[in-house]
Image (cartoon, rainbow, N blue to C red):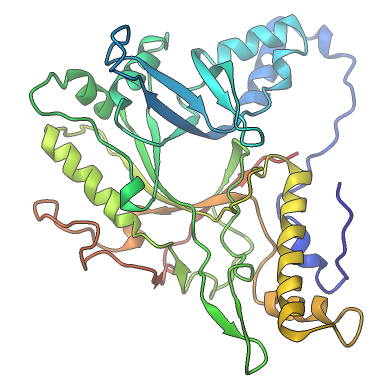
Amino acid sequence: MAPTDETPSTSRHLQLFNPIPERYHAFHLFPRFTEDIRWLVWEKVLSHERMIDITLRPADCANETKHPRDYDIVVDNRWKLSKLFRTTSESRRAALAFYRVQLPCWYQSQRNQGEMNGVLYLCPELDTLMLNSLEVFEYFAHDLWAHDPRRVGLINLALEVKHPINAYKTPDTEGRDTTLLKEALLRIKRLTIMSTSCTRKHWIDLDGSRNIKDFQRNRTPPIRGGVLGFERLSCDARLNKDSLKAVYLGSWDPRELFYRWFRFLALLGVQHNHKIDYRVGICRKGFEIRPVSDRNRAVEWLQDEHRKLKGQLQFLRGPPTYADQFDDEIAKLLGPFPPPVVGFWLFSMESLGPLPDINEIHGPESTVFRRKKTLDMSKHKPELCLANIY
């Protein structure tokens, strides 16, 4: 782990809320269990939700050897496979049965920008797939369903809030068969619109004459890392009555994506016979090349934030008058905020307020959508999806 330079006054804001995993000693009597009991233990170890970032890359249809249905699955951050894949032959069989849908994919490493052949292992009931686009969604969803022996398919979908220029693309539906697309949309049970830029970038006055950006200061929203597994908690125990009175939702209103989603369903005439769980996810993430992929990396990320804020203070003030001056000032700045946590919040869609009428046309710049404003969400307590970082 990287060395720390914090003092006791600032260490609270460098300590993760995520619990340190318990250490388990070898249980030598485990092999004496019957096979069905051991299998239940393997499944228990694997049974947790995951959020997986996936880029669906359409094939280059200019190439005559490619069919329009050809596409690549790119997993944005390569993750460590469960140790059960390599513990024993029995545990590997259990892991392969649990992650029963297996599709060829590419792993993309953000460190070297390279890609490697791999396999995407999925458990449809527990995995939420955050897609970059709906352009080839129908083919991906159909393949996932066709390779699922239980015929569950893609039921948990997430889309990220982006600038309209980079927003997700929807398939062209004019003059073609949309059967697969409708079938895929009808299988959806949960849709999460994920806002990952929820750190307000405004200015605060430090000394009456000079200012400093506040994006390092607002640490209340969870940190979105490259970690996949998470545990869903019914509330965020870090919060107090004032924590959610002014939640910054990023530069673009999440309601716009919900609005576009419902217009897309209406265009296709898709009506669900089951209730859909619509959620808005809120978190913050940095712009570093290396994602927060484990506990050590999370600590490095927090220490780097601390050093940057300390450097800005020194730039504004000059050399400190005593050794721990800037650490003490940072502790004062961060005082109102809870300890950092890796994960994300899940609010109900209703917490955003009413959506525009889908029968009315509203573009990205429409005044019905908020721009760079905060929202009082204190009446809507979020679930905390706590990342499993080791």
